[in-house]
Image (cartoon, rainbow, N blue to C red; front, side, top):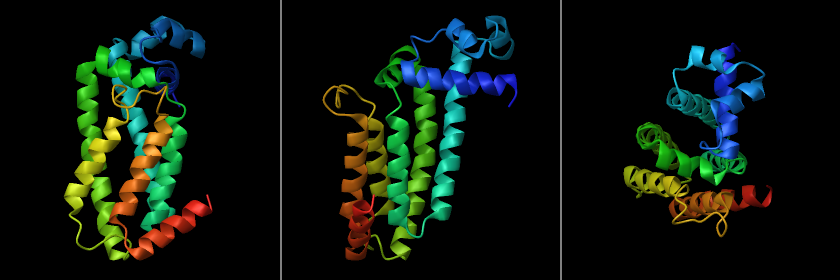
Length: 201
């Protein structure tokens, strides 16, 4: 990992655990024990660094998802592994991270949300179709409609006006969305697998 990649990785961690506003370039430089000038040799400003950290996290997310799909025996197992890893990631994210991005960097937030929604739509669509083939999801569901509904619900998680963190822990919101949607589209076999895996968690 070269210095540019180290800066992206460390900045991403700091942004997510503290919020974007609180983390200055000086903070990142001190954490990595490098000069602020070294950071500016790789990134012209904080905006560019934020974009790069979001791209980096997205690539990690894609790799994790692909690994989960490859090693899962069926779609229900994959969904619950998505839930487990997603909850672990979200539990480490400061709620200010999302609100700071929306409020202070709206153009970056909007662009990255659109990219993420496109990726997530294709992912969910593929999972729903595969679930039908496995006899786990109901044949009469419209995959595109379900995928779009689920995406909007998932992106609503970061809206503190709907789910204030003090009242609704983000991991609990995430779990309720995934589990309730899965139950709603599952066949009897799918429901049996869901309960079996959840009891063994």
